[in-house]
Length: 340
Image 1 (cartoon, rainbow, N blue to C red):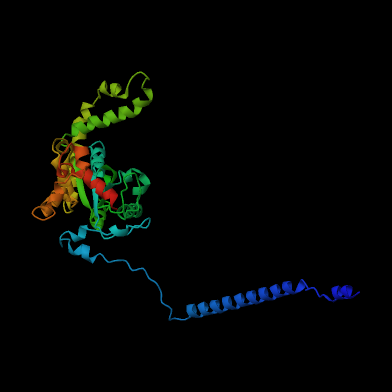
Image 2: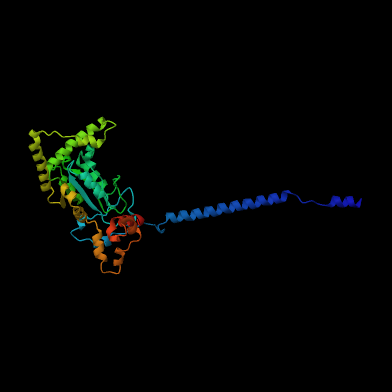
């Protein structure tokens, strides 16, 4: 009987008490979190409403140091564009020269522009005004030029943010010389490159050949090459109009040179570029694009002169053990692409 009473006197702990305690702790934790968050938000709100909070501003580095190294006579032709479509990053203070290739169709301007675009930091956008709406009035012309010279005109010729010269092709027969064209050139301080032919008859034959080429392409038979068709083509020239046509072209070139004589310009002839490669060096110097000869002159006699003769394995592979000075264009491209 005593054992039975002892068993009845054992008090077992209730399972509800731990559950109640856990709920109490959870409620306290949630309440504390809410209080802390509300306090923080009120403090942040009070600071933002006040005028004593510091503001963060991004200050762009001025390009005064870059301008100090530019000759006074060259400063009007040096620009520091700020594109709207991308950032020039560390090249923001690299000067940019504007240029325009003034020429006529079938005068070698496409080939010449390809040569210019082979330079890693020269970008020529092509015959942009061949689209009539872009030259319909002064407003559209200015808008187009602003996009080109501000580096916001993107094309296959677009280069990196370190572009040193940017321009386009202007065909003389697409503009009226009295339509304020001179004012547009002077406003943008562009460097004008006049490209023409000495032999206007060659241009006339090229125009006829190009017209025939466009018509003949759809008619070429599968077993005949395009080159064979053009090789057999002999243009027919209307001799009655030959002299007047040649005089008209000659007059356009003469008037254009007189019209833009007050601007900064250089005159190039297609025939001279084909036979004299130094003409391209003249263009590079005209645009003030630094070349390797200037680098050589700068390093000669200094402790860095040996850099000009080091191969770095690049010259050995590409130029057959030639020193680096014999193969500088590839080195220049490699250096520019490796270190943006």
